[in-house]
Amino acid sequence: MSIEKTLEYIHKIKWLGSKPGLSRTRELLGLMGNPQKELKFVHVAGTNGKGSVCAYISSVLQEAGYKTGLYTSPYINRFNERMQINGKSITDEELEELTDYIRPYADGMSDPPTEFEVITALAFEYFARNKCDIVVLEVGMGGELDSTNVIDTPECAVITSIGLDHTKQLGSTIAEIAKAKAGIIKGGDTASYESEGEAYEVIKSACVRSGANLVTADFSEIKNLKTGTDGSTFDYKGLCGIKIPLSGTYQPKNCALAVETVRLLAKKGYDITDENIKEGLRKTKWSGRFEILGREPTFILDGAHNPHGMKAAAESIGALFGQKKTVFIVGAMADKDIDGMFSLIVPLADMFFTVTPENERSMPAEDLMRHIEALGGRAVSCEGFSEAVSRAVERAGKDGVVAALGSLYFSSDIRKAYNEYVQGV
View 1 (cartoon, rainbow, N blue to C red):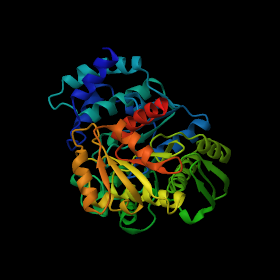
View 2 (cartoon, one colour; view 1 turned 90 degrees about the vertical axis):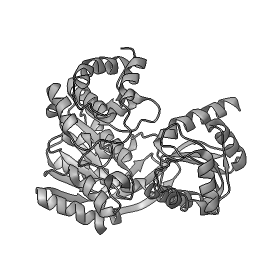
View 3 (tube, one colour; view 1 turned 135 degrees about the vertical axis):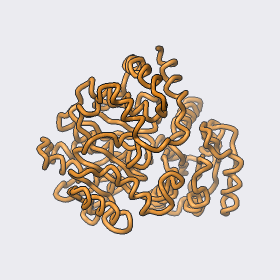
View 4 (cartoon, one colour; view 1 turned 60 degrees about the horizontal axis):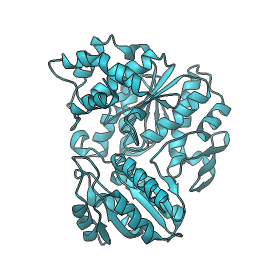
């Protein structure tokens, strides 16, 4: 199949929310000869920070000389980004070939697999065929019943920051959500962002039950921290002068969790030096997380899409720009806690420009505008992303700040509209 036909086939299965259970993924992989059995994994779950933590870990492993697979979701610009080896995305030709291989197995199943289950199986086959030394595997949603959880005990299970999101599927409390995330713990080693509170107690109990060794990131050990729009420098547990290029005041904490993870791998026998860690962190690339797209005005793109993520974005904006009011471009899924999310950033805002992301779950721009106005914010709904970007930049002026916040589903449209605006000026 051509790449267009390949993506059409993958997307027609349409993941409109996961069907619970791992039976379909196991059946499909069994028909394929269980490629996941040939691989070693770092398995990463959590509410926020999964992508950044995966990026840090995979960059360090590459720097240490390991052929490293990376599986993430959703993508920012192209579908192919979801499967990478040593920082390079799967090619169109490889994706076409793998889909042609998997399609007869998937189509022949009496209980058809979901879109995400097919993509996960594609990734396992891709990494196995390319004989990856290790794969950094990001959970799609939850953990226990996520299709990535068909793997055996990983080299390390990693649980990032936990907050309220996907409550319909995972539960309405922090403890219930943590239980779903902790479902990836199967013994072996576990690294946790949480070190106290409800989520930590759930993770600790899961480790005790499975006999897993638990290590937590110690944020009090982040010393000599300097953070700006170009990233952060700091010391952490004997690693002096760590430099990370990812912006956001929360990134040093995500980085600390990644350091704990790769040090656990080193204790297992992986040849990872302190210099590998520092250099790998310095070279980390990750789009769409408090990413500075341009200056004059400062234009930020961030995938905050739940109250936990909005809180982190608001803290970063406040820390970096002080009392300067921000112009926001926002879009949201209708099934999110809209008021809980936007009440956190209304006090920082000069003006909101709302858009409708291209997704069937999206809240219409006019509805989002009315929610923001009810919270005391000033908002204008826009017909499209180009209008929102041009109006926001004009409103902010050269010395201002524009922040585009919302699901990663709208990040590529924001980036495209911004690039077109810059080229047209």
